[in-house]
Image (cartoon, rainbow, N blue to C red):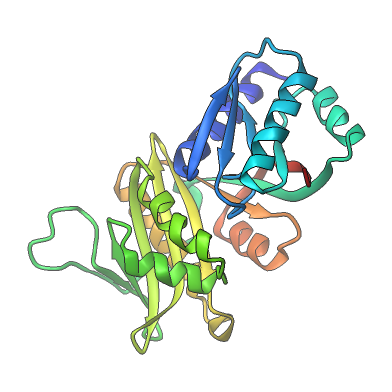
Length: 274
């Protein structure tokens, strides 16, 4: 693999790892083992983040025992940086390919955003973010710098999270994000019907938690939220953006392409009940 491309892959993997903490994690001989009661694959899987010295079979067995203790499947993240023989080893042990995800990037200088009619600021706001961004057709995106309990509750409702353990631990995961955040939502009759989260790290803004209520789709809410995140990200000093979208989610992929994002690389997981 070209050294420059390898460096870029590693960089994106690093900042995306910063952006989405797990409920618990441990470092084991260069492998980061993440536990989050199966909330997402990313936060409940093993990522290779450093040099390794222990034989692979011994390390995989260790991870399987750890996930067995936590009562979840064992999952390993597979990205272009890994030696293909590692995935082959997992496949031979019965691990199945799951949750294929495309990483997309964009240069903020060339994205195609919805044009806001006005950015509205609360009196005394010294944080540099508007309190809302108003678009045409009375579409208003609310903007906050901090993740609140109310916003998290809205996200869990929008993405259908019902498991009581997940509903207990996920708020702490969101609040553990160490980077500057831009928190967006759309409300209808006082109820949150769309969400989005921007996470700023160095020159990038990561786009996360884009959810829209099924009853409110095809109203350009996701486009408006993404436009707001990217616009405010650029105001906060970002020059590039990235996001992660499940392969096969054609409507989302089409939206992001239309905004100016391009496919960069793909990762997936190998998972097995243990």
